[in-house]
Image: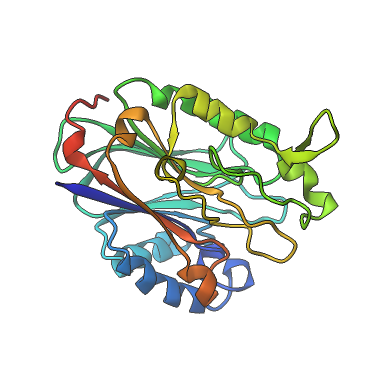
Length: 281
């Protein structure tokens, strides 16, 4: 069995205090933790200020994680002037044949990469997301172009901080969520109940994407651990049907929460590449 291991993690302001401008004590804890997960590909979110000085922090992270290549998808500025970049770091098993960033349709950014694994012929499509945290309608618009990636035979993986419930995730108790944040996540039913707006997730499920956590029966939360927030599974691995057949393991790593260096857990996915002989570009 030839396995490929992928990790997704929201770094919380790039691992630095003061919104990414301050001390890097949290990244000094995050880096060895991430390296211990022994991934072939790392997909990171909230990489604030990693574009500075010729992407110095990106390349430092690449070395610290033992990777050989790194790509930073630079994000739009938010209303508070944060720029939550995403980063894709990989070892030599991944050979990119194209990569880039899409900002026009996204609140933050979509980082995209197409490539081959282990010099194989099949092309993999990876999309590193950080979706709109404020608008269910905009999240739906953000994911609509991804539907084509679920076409039969495609090897597609959509991952990252989706800021929405994963496919099949149980309805949380939303009562702690402050009223001013209701519209960011909830919709009112005909009988007056406030429940999760699942429109964006339904678009991806309807296209044929498989949620790795739901596929293996793991409903553990990955985010929402802050005060007055709601713990839920919002960091996701969504796979095309062919790629879903190769799932060997999925795990939620709680060390970032327990040790206080992020407000998200890390998630990991292990795939058996030997099952993918029939995949196509």
